[in-house]
Image 1 (spheres, helix red, strand yellow):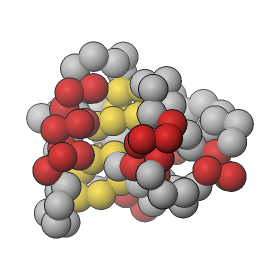
Image 2 (cartoon, rainbow, N blue to C red):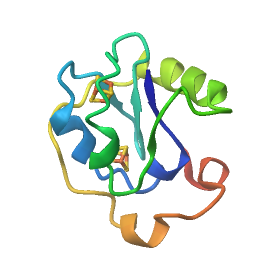
Image 3 (cartoon, rainbow, N blue to C red):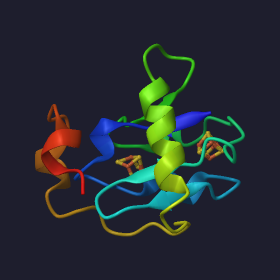
Length: 104
Ligand code: SF4
Ligand code: F3S
């Protein structure tokens, strides 16, 4: 599966949702997640994210993010249409520790 990680938080560009063939992105207040059981591993969303927040779970140390994506994808509504990024997207892009600072 692919997963959404830290740098989506407070940016939420949403370019990713337009390209997903199985509509497996789910929307929270300030980030999106991917449902790990619905993702078919096509990889097309990864290069679309301006914040480089989408990663394949074959990369090391992503177990926590897989579980995070699973948990919230079961609570949040699906999103299939792109919308405006969050107002501070450019400023927040690349900041560290976003999960602790901004996730809500
Ligand atoms: Fe959707 Fe493909 Fe990205 Fe998985 S890898 S979330 S199926 S676009
Ligand atoms: Fe987030 Fe990147 Fe999509 S910032 S909303 S994963 S395009």
